[in-house]
Amino acid sequence: MPRGGLAQLGLAAAGGALAALGLPSLGLWAFAWFGLAPLIVAANAAPTARRSALYGFTAGFAYHAVAVHWIYPTCRFAQVPAVVSALAVIALAAVLGASWAAAAALARALSASCPRAPRPLVWALAWTAVASAASRWTARFGVDLLGYTQWSNLSLIQAGSWGGPHLLDFLIMLFNAALAEAWLDAVEKDNRAVAALASALALAAAVWAHGASVLAARPRTRGPVGRVEILQPRVDQYHKWNEAWIAEILAGYDELLSRPRPAPPALVVWPETAIPRWTSRAVPVPEAARWAAKLGAQNLVGIIASPENEAGAKSGPANAVQLIAPDGKIDGFYAKRQLVPFGEFVPLRRFVPRFVIDRWLMILDNLGDLEAGAARQPLLQTAWGPTAVTICYEAIFPRWPRLDAARGARLMINITNDAWYLDTWGPRQHYRVNRFRAIENRLTVIRSGNNGVSAVIDPWGVTTAELALNERGRLDAEVPLRDGFPARSFYTRHGDWLGGACLALVLLGLLRRSFI
Image 1 (cartoon, rainbow, N blue to C red):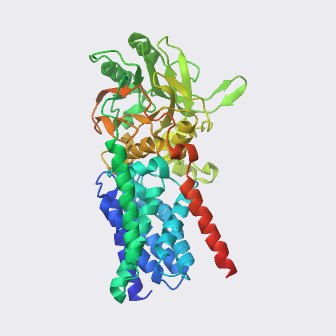
Image 2: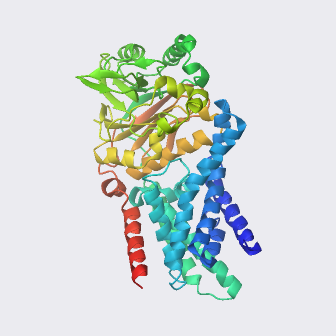
Image 3: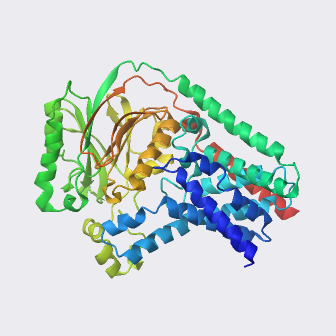
């Protein structure tokens, strides 16, 4: 590769890594608005789409390597060898970087024969189309959308309620591409890009101003409230599945629930897999049932549902929740729909060497591959009305909360166990995606994590109660009973209309190009 090409690769990688600094926990959101300009400059000047794809992959690899670097200490915590842990980060960054390669190649192909003025729009369309399509088939993390870099810019991310999860990707790429054209103008002593840059800046400013006005209209009085108690027991991950520790773990929940309270709650939320043993789907968890009766409150408790036959049909093991009524009976059941590859099931297990499972996937092998729940399960009924649940990984997928909100959910409960990730970016990234889900669907999110972060997030994305990461405790919070958005949001009602529109326009552009 020519020396200039190596320099462009380096700049693209540096820009991608810089953009990742906007993610939790740093929140340096401004870097995403110019960090991708070197990639776009290089891709536009590339002699072939293949070279553009290389620049895109390099930037994407660097972005995701910074974003998911916490996978390394997570693997080491699970006693995975250092070399394999490093390879896990490299492999994941490469897989997630592939969509950046596709977007760069596509943008280069579509803009090669068009005037410079519309090139920023072509880049925004191509990028959003690929991001929307990739979200349906690639592995997901709370980092794979550029919009997640804006989590700390509360005014800007209000746009998710009408534009969905890909609107900020569109805006960020439009601005970066306009900035790349301005860069070229500076080199060529031209000013053709001024209008494009001004338009991109004006559009971003308008979206921010709209969000600021929405936040300004947020009610200052909450009206009637219901009390919720969120348990954060901070159970050691290596003790959790050791039978010798079960009694102590369950006693820890008793201690949290025995602490003084000013008034009884309407709901108690236990974290993911709170009960460290197999539990029948049809039999209430006795520990939670006892507290439900004592407090006169529903208890939502995370379980590992045992494989069993129900009405002649076999049900596999599942990561699930029981909602237990004050009378001790089961009020509802939910099984996780989106399972974690290599965490809850082994993809193509028959092709994975046995020594890999024996050495690095022992816990999973003891439980067996879990079974995913149906896409449309009955919503739970709580004091807040129809209530949806996401378990851990599911919160990263916008389609699940949107599906449940469209079916009538007025409250979202996310339970998780992020203890594997230690005190890294991982649990913070996982926590912050819930802010986007709350705004996108204009509903309250209650979150309970084994080691945190447990919180209540209102429909505007404002955290109204929080228990810090790795702090053991019980978070007592008041959640409004009044639904501020009974019609939910435009995104809830219409789905990913922006991603679909970008896909359609890109396909039309490719068809047009093929006939010219």
